[in-house]
Length: 374
Image: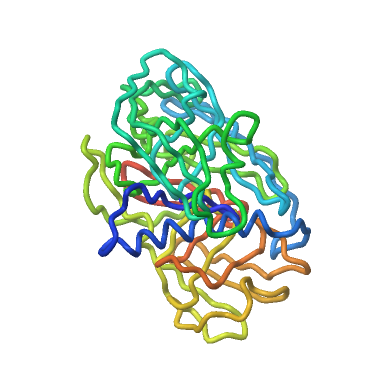
């Protein structure tokens, strides 16, 4: 979902009004979150875990797996953090924002090569909640990751223009995308459907053999500057992970399963509130710089503050997978212990703080997510 402050948010490409109003709100809030992050002041602090990042050791080489460097980028005045991945598209190379909350490859036209690129005349426009808009067309092109080539060309959005329209706040996250900026687009790797362009979904499913089975994110911890992205799941590299199953809700046009990756319900507790062990649907989203809660879904009235105050204790339990706790620091640190509480999404959003606290595995073939807390 790209939510900056975490993220741009789910794309709103051409979503009709009416029955899809909830999805539109999801789109709008996503980037509204991003903007909040930009506006927040730089700060330092401590969350529950203060240990230095553990050393990252790639899994031993195995057939059908590959470990790829994954930059951890520190961005903006608030020093929020997001993940990048270098990909190849039609012979060109570029670093894209890695977003487990959205699905599909969206890349600037200037960042792709000429080899095997098939540009169509089918328009594709995606508007994010802070007013950032990608304008372009659908295209097909060979895709590669870590030197692994896709089995066939993938369908993607070729971005011709990044602009700002009708911003809900005072700035736009288009400052993240373009020449001389951190990213040349978004690599959306969600297992679910995220766009009205149904042909645009995770390009990882187009990789050959076991490489398309799933992937693992290991950030190395909050203080890390580079993590490891592993494509291809095996019994060896998933050892120690606790997995939970997503429900299958359909298939993409090519037969790839669609897994409802926001269906799992975590139990939430916030100290000194009525929220005690309340279940709510949850999404695990690397495109979000922070944790975003909708306390209304947890049975509480909107809080008087936008975020949990220093000293507050927060807990999320996904039965059989993790028991994750944060004590908000003095002061709060974006990306570590900042928790927004008055969200508008119809789910809870666990963003980069979780990825800094746990290795996370997404099983594309079986429709599962796994966690290995640090």
